[in-house]
Length: 141
Image 1 (cartoon, one colour):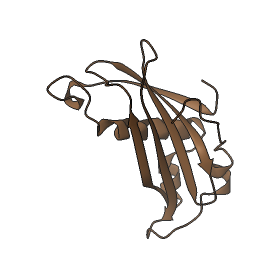
Image 2: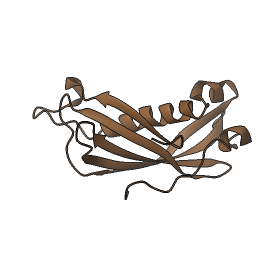
Image 3: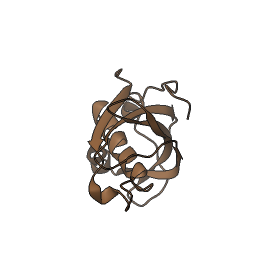
């Protein structure tokens, strides 16, 4: 991966599957959140650090396109990158792939806005925004 595209790996846990051993669709958003948190940490930014400054990043939009099922015990690789960033909003892209063969399981996007501790719209600190380099999508979302 490049410095501007991070990679998070996880195993599909039994509790994340249905009776057929297929990962439930709701888990993909949780997996994206983990990838996004890891990506920000790789950029030198932590959510906790933002919260200590009184800034929250609230999800305002989320889309997942499911392409193939993830199954119990699959290794999942989630690539994450910044698709767009403005003074108040950041959009992340994701590619969720099966780790052993690289098969694309899903693509996703989340948009987050900066709010203060009273939930009023605020700005992403310039030092944070400067670390968020926009990357052309490595896969078709």
